[in-house]
Image (cartoon, rainbow, N blue to C red):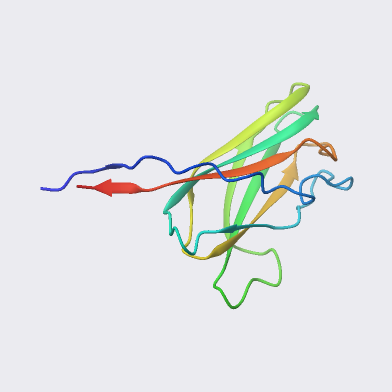
Length: 140
């Protein structure tokens, strides 16, 4: 009988943030532009998404939400509505923050990621990073 277990994780992507997370106007309550992660060849099932934020002082109850939308190869959403949403609390102490989202469902398309800032403050305009590390299941 076959046994399902985790396969060895893939290599972490390059930093996808570019100018999307590093903008002067990423204020509380706003959503970033989109970052593209192409999973159309690898077709990985899951990923760990890591967002590294430069030094900030979040308010109590602060959080960051990750939105995942897919592009089916021909069409992409025209607005940032729907998609899969993942939310993580952010510690309300001053300093750089690392926010991680585990078990993010990856689709067999080129996907669009965006970040919703609910930290209670403006995210710094430099020093922010965004990575995806894919992984799968192994049945043998």
